[in-house]
Structures are given as C-alpha cells and as structure tokens.
Length: 328
Image (tube, rainbow, N blue to C red; front, side, top):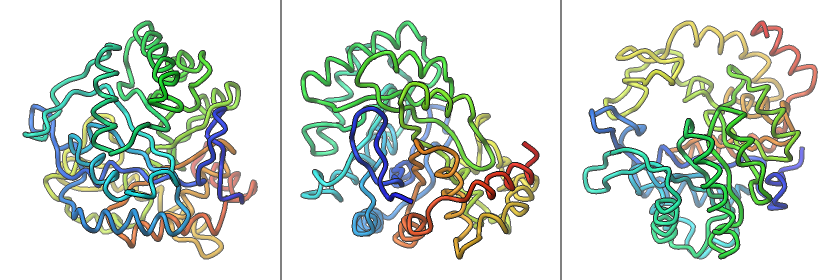
C-alpha cells in the first residue's frame, strides 16, 4: 500500500495515517461538568510521541481549538517546532470555551468568529497558516454554513489556510461545503464497527478526502478494554454522552460491543497485525480516500498506530469476511 495519500482535490500529500490530537489536550469539561477529554495527560510524553510519529513517517496531525481548551494546539505547535513545514496541520473552529477554567461554554457559527478563532489557532500553533481548517459544529444550519464556506475561501485567498472541510456525519451538510473549490475533505466517524457508506460515496463523487475520526471506536478496537477496566473520572468514556456508543456510564465498555470486537479479532489480526492495526487496515481497504486519525497519549501508542502503515490495507476478501461476521 502507498504510505501517502492525496488530501482530496487539494493535491496536498499526507501520510495514509494521521494522528488525532484530542486526547493530548488533557482534561476539560462542559458547563455542567461533563468530561470532554480523555483524562490526565503527560505533556512531555505527548511531545515525545509526536516526535516519534514524525520519525515513523506520519505527516498529518489533526487537532481542534477546543481540545483541552487550546492546550492540544499549544502542545502540537511546541512539538512540531522547526519541523512544522514537514507536516500538514488540521484544526477546527466553532466551539467557544474558557481557557482559564478549561470549560466549553457554547458555539458560534458566525463568519466573524471564524476569523477570530483562526487567528487564535495560528497563535497557539505558532504557525502562519493552517493546512486544513475544519468547521466543528456538526449540526449547524446549512445556510449559515454556506456563509462560512465563503469566508473560508477568503481565508485561502489571504494565505491563512490552504484548504477547508466540515467535521460532520451528515453527507448533505458536507455537500454544502463541497460546492466551492478549496473544500477538500470531510471529517466523519467511521470504523470497522460503524460503516459510513453514504459519506464514502459523497467523498468519491465530490473528490474529497475522508478523514476518519473514531477509527478505533474510542478505544474499543485496541483490545485494551476487554477486561472492562475502570475509567478515570476525567475521561469522557466514564460518563459517555448520547452520541458515544460502546460505553456505559460508570461501568466501562459495553459487553455487547466487546463481543463484536472479539468476533472480528482473527481477521483483523491477520498478517501479524495488532487489533488496532487491523482496524486501521479496514479503513484503508474501505476506500482509497480514507485517512484515519487515531488518538494517542504515549510513545507506545504512537509506535503501534504508525506501524499499521507497514502492513497496509486488508484484502477485498477480508473486507467481505468482515461484513459477513458483522452481518452487514
């Protein structure tokens, strides 16, 4: 398998695997105290993990201004340092937050806020441009989104961003952004347990990259939740919101979801892959446009995720076998 992919119609080359930087933002919450991060984090280990990913050929890093209320962007910018021009950096906007209290306070879908958020992200990332700027409010009004799409075209002309996308699971909304030239991707949920056929079809039709969040199903596809270990209180999975499937409040991973993972274990771990590497291999086989962005909090996780590129995609026969096992 090619270890690089083209980011949609932009012509921008990225590693076939990206790294998602949500977890390295550390703990943050909403106004009701609901955890929105993945628990405590060691910033020095995060920096070491990013450096290791770079050494292993990862050139695409995805973050958001709201992850750790700015902290993820700061850590990514610090870790990249002089290697910034060697990578493609994606971030997101639309959420409003208080950095001092690490609290999400709301959302803002105005073009004026998009510009303010962009300037703030550039400062935190210590860079003069964002390669892929993504709208983070997944269910925003499509008419308002058209205004934001036009604002993004202005940002491109000003040299502040190279391309843009919408982070949404709704193909109709993604199609609104796709109407203009410099929209090059859609970020959406997809993994071996949760296929997204309509979104993959849109990406093929519109020439977009499919940037896959939750490629490891929030950790279910790593195998580390098989014993249903207790999750720390600052971890979003300990009190999962309605959209987060596969976990139950206070009791860890859902046994029914773990059973599905176990049923797929043999096919995903073929060829010497780990379970996580097999899950990433499924996404590469699912579409030539996919760029999965698994999260990480340690050098060991960075090494395992990046190691998936050496194994490449599953075969067409294995894709069919996965569908048979899951009953799709």
